[in-house]
Image 1 (spheres, rainbow, N blue to C red):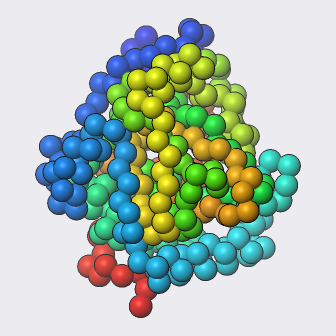
Image 2 (spheres, rainbow, N blue to C red):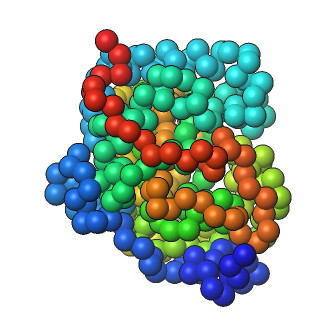
Amino acid sequence: MISPAKDRYASRTDRSAGIVARHDPVVYEDGRYADALSPEQVQAYDRDGFLLLENLIPQAEVDALIAEIARMSRDPAIIRREECITEPGSNAVRSIFMVHQLSSLISRLTRDPRLVNVARQILGSEVYIHQSRANMKPGFKGKEFYWHSDFETWHVEDGMPAMRALSCSVLLTDNNACNGPLMLVPGSHRQFISCIGETPQDHYKHSLKKQEYGVPDAISLQLLAEQGGIQAMTGKAGSVVFFDCNTMHGSNSNISPWPRSNVFMVYNSMENVLGAPKYGLAPRPEHIATRAGVKALTPLDALKLVG
């Protein structure tokens, strides 16, 4: 186990919160490993830590994905699984994890060249799925996701070595200012926020409903927001958001009548596979952090998911 003193991204130790400069690139291999994005788009991702590609997935394909997620959300066999997370205080489905293993349609989505080649280009290598899930925010009762950096959790609880992963969110519904869209802090990926609090075993059982550890302190959050602002990812269904593993993000609760849902996939570099979790923590389950049978994704030849 790497001691906190030797871990350049140490967090959740007995020391106070802190801000650490990023040691890893944002775009690897100068963005030349694949050619899904233009040089201007790569530059924008490197600068901001995220990129919104509007209307990337046609409506017919979005409709097929919506129908698949609805089917899975109603399936008693899936609802009973550990991969299915309900909202705090209700039985409403909040997230379904490992959807690329539970659905052949979403398995194909992970290998769609419109998505996977963006990940390959930015990460400068072949990639695999570290985590996948469908997120639902039903109208009137969808709860918030508090501010956090995914890498902080993946580094501490999963043993992810470096910031060489990215998230891909495929919008299945229109995301507007009222239904709890994803919010990101531009430029926040350049600084790592070390958090306070010793992580209990099996923390994931609670954090997937409401995160209490790995939450940045208010002063650090305010500093990041004052430096970069906050940008809401509003867009039409079929748009796709790519964001760096260390970009600070969160979302408000959905008290509007309009649901918000997305398919969320984490692409990790084949050169950044997981090590041991920090501080003697037990590895999280496979549906949250892939360890077994890690295999590079082969992009599909066809662009269409359906039809």
